[in-house]
Image (tube, rainbow, N blue to C red; front, side):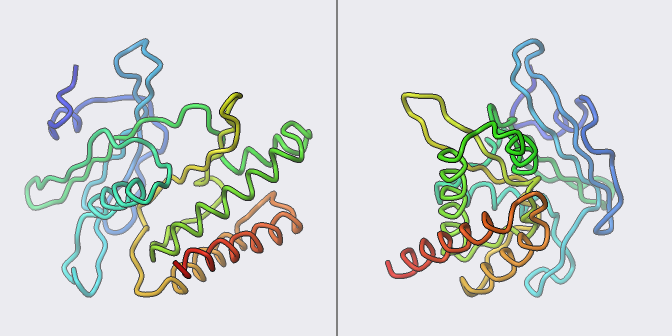
Length: 227
């Protein structure tokens, strides 16, 4: 069993490649999946980054991107926004080069919004559940933006949906890939940039769904801003 707080052990463990290491932000970044313990059906996702940094006015020399993502995971959870469970996150320095690790649990029972619309084309969920999904998505995004957090990569493949079984019922929304998430000075800045990005990349979402989502989102955001 891997010690959950041991950076070097997590760095060495190998799984199945989900995302081949690619070069960006001056370094490499890749993702592997791992069933731990074997046969448990508990799927973990391990993101490894080497020399992968971002720069801001506060960090002009650069800071490991993983550190920003770890902070975002913790802040989203504090806000009550569903994200994958953070198993381990940390950074290290080897021979003057930053290394970053992020280990998260897989989301059980969720499908991406991208896949949702592929399934919905077959009238799988039904209108009532579909409306609930849009309502919960609007609530989630308004909660995020009212707290001045911007996701930064709000594509359908990073929004996940789960339909709960009775008696609980309802729909859950989860957000993934928080690497570009950051706190903005104004709610309007976080909102405008995320929603415009989502509009341009919404894929299979129909125009009427987008219009309804916008109405519900603006209403929810106004209520939160008034508190």
